[in-house]
Image (cartoon, rainbow, N blue to C red; front, side, top):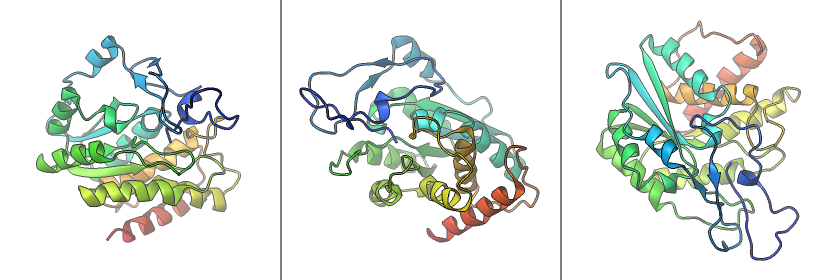
Length: 273
């Protein structure tokens, strides 16, 4: 979850969370230029700016194959880090037996995507659009505008696209799965789309397999294992639930963990029918 507080004067000792600690995160389009403009109100997210070169790298890129299943992932380092995107690609392709293209667009927050022409160009070429990166409050006390996310989703709906909302996993040790999911559910209610509740799969696996480390060292981003299970959940929602009985199991995941996760992911679909 990308969250950060910046207050006038000296921040509280526990105030620097989220964007202030992004060590180890992998970004598709290189390093970011971070900047804070003026003095933000308490709990305001830190602004992140793309360089001109990075903006050009994202500009009006079309998917390679118009006949493929084109999946557009619009989000921040949670969506772009580790093996999440490759997991989505692998399992959607395996399930559908079709060519699949997964294209990520990096934005710090969804509000940063709403005025970018290249984003709408990519949306028009996609079959499935996954949104991640709504502004969220570390303290759960502040509510940030959702109108930008709603506009993006309504545009995708006008384009006739399938919309999914990637509700992020909670920070390690923080009870906030329901809080995060409810924010996205409110956006979906005002627009369109289904919620992909990655927080629930993290909570389930943390309880069932506590030795499996789902988080990176910062306790905010996912480890490779956590990214795999998040990607598996997203892929399942991309295809409307797995039906194939021969899904590949990575050698670093046990069969018990994989099958337990699949059973739980199946139950997640039932909560939105």
